Image (cartoon, rainbow, N blue to C red; front, side, top):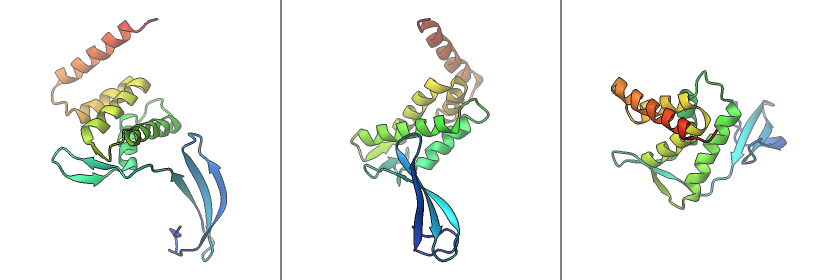
Length: 156
């Protein structure tokens, strides 16, 4: 692992610990040259995922882009960073387990909305408003009505 401070290739692992979600390892490293310390996080990657965009363009899947969009939807909501990481890890696992190496953006968006719906209704509506490109207030009204109907149907 290259040092982010001086670009030296030789770094030493000082400590390794599994992350709370159990799907990654946190490593504390020290540079042999400059002595600076830094942290890396390692995750298992089952396959290289390619995202097929609406316009047909292909790009490598970016876990951080997904996490960033979910964090934006959940900004100032009572959802912990750990819950967000677990949600993103769950979505990535489902994408990898699908067996497909190319995944369209629609599928990723639907998985994100499904996960958000289970955790926070406000975050779900925020994400849906961007993902589904809400243009009028009736778009919000329709999704809020659907959420209210689902809550009424849930057993108490």
